[in-house]
Image (tube, rainbow, N blue to C red):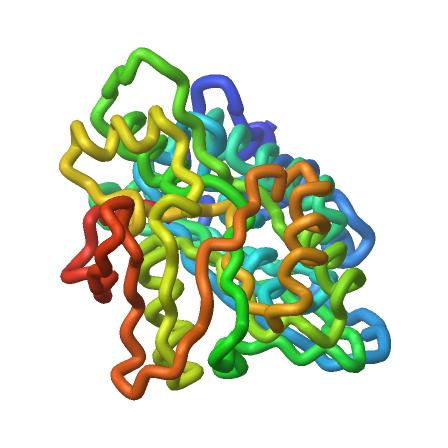
Length: 346
């Protein structure tokens, strides 16, 4: 009978401090929720680490904290986002992601039904991506000291021999591509956060991009110079980061940057520039010019790259400016963002 006090009530129960205390309640939470959803042999060993064989190649690792508000939004939730965000960071090196680790910071009072939904979504995203969550950690903070749940994920992957993709490899003459329409995620979050209705459905583009990257690497294994997922700060920030890292300038064509009409309209209403709005399922590719069409076709043949476009070129520029040719034929500087347009976006 004493043990039943620790049975999880996933319908109306809440997280309390005992769920992070290292005792029976925490063990019940791990067994009845995390191991149930993440179910894999490495995790079920219940060690403080996961030990696995590493295939040939160079190891890639990335870690990412997720503090998004609201926890559930049109097109996704913090659970799936925590998987996609880290997998994409690993994939931007050209790596094949292998495994994930996850750390949860839970706030006292979080509904167990919400946590169950988040972990189920996270597990489904990891399974779909073929990258199991094999180790993790859970902590509970007092009521008012968190915001429901924060999730940190770490991913490891393998970069194949001969692939060399990094942010400092862009050179003048290279082409710049984007895999699809920008701004979807940020606008979806803002709509969900403020309960806004735009008369049309705007959903997050949150998705795991490693399959798209694998196709691109297979099509042009030595011709891709840089990959970057334009998350916080959007496309503008990603381009400025790459220009700065590589010591070059970038010129993009406004008319070639794909933006959905409803996203553009929502940004106008909200006073946002879609170039600076976050994405969670898009990538920027800088490649050698004569591989651009091959990569464009490869991207457009993948479900996550159907709206891909060649948007510009890399140029020599000692100031490392990103410039945009406008629809009126002039040019303007696309600068680093001043502050953050949309906090708690990922």
